[in-house]
Every structure is written in C-alpha cells, then in structure tokens.
Length: 149
Image 1 (cartoon, rainbow, N blue to C red):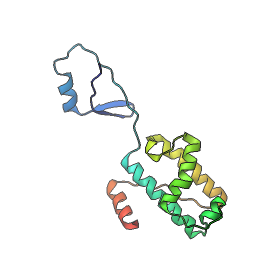
Image 2: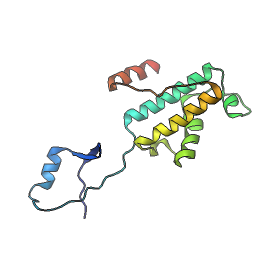
Image 3: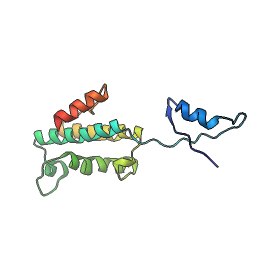
Image 4: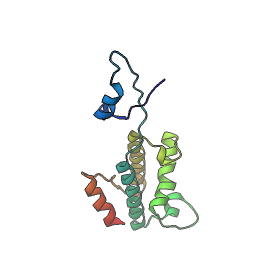
C-alpha cells in the first residue's frame, strides 16, 4: 500500500514540505518508502503566458491584414481572436506534434515545441514573429495582463 506525501520535483530532486515529511516518517526508523513521481502539468504562469500569446498573435495577424481566410484558405473573411488562434492554429499544431487534444493536457516542457513550430510557420509564410511572453516576476505578468485586457 502506498501513502501519498505532498512534494514537488526540482532539478530532479524531491522537495517536501518539512513538516509533512517529518510527520509522515515519525516512528518509522529503518523502513523504506517508494517515491512515486507524478507528471507535472504546466504552471498557472505558463498557462497565462500561453493565452496572452494567443491574443498577441491574433493582434499581429489582424494588424498585418492577415484574416483567417488568407491564413487558412477559408471562404469567409474573419478577424482573429485569442480564442481562434488557440482553437485553429495552436491546437492543430499541438495535435500534430504531441497527439493531445486540449491545452490542459500539456506538460511543462511541451509548450516550447508547439510555440517554435507555429512561430516558424508564421514567420516563414507571413513574416510575423511574435515572441512568447516572458516575465521576470508574477507582479510584472499581472501588470501586463491587466494593461492589455
């Protein structure tokens, strides 16, 4: 029987809440335990940056006069939104590269390859490069997102 101990992995090493770990191992000298590592999903900061990038791409495509008809060869001219970038561009690349339907299934290291693929595609075909948002601090991210909303 396995008992779960809340922890996270940093640089390949488990990091436990000291109080929780101490309480768990108390009185269990000489016993061994299995550490089961769960896959980590992307962070909330990555999620917010991802959605901000969708909006940035939509604005860049619209500003360049590249509506959905031009980019996708559809018969109806529609402007881009953050949601259409996510649904039409990002998910198509994500499915092709990672075989994952939803952005909620992405792990921490899976955002970069999809971004790099899309960024290269938009740059090659339309001369657009929209850098992925990077923030030094949570406060900087909050200030940027409230300013762009």
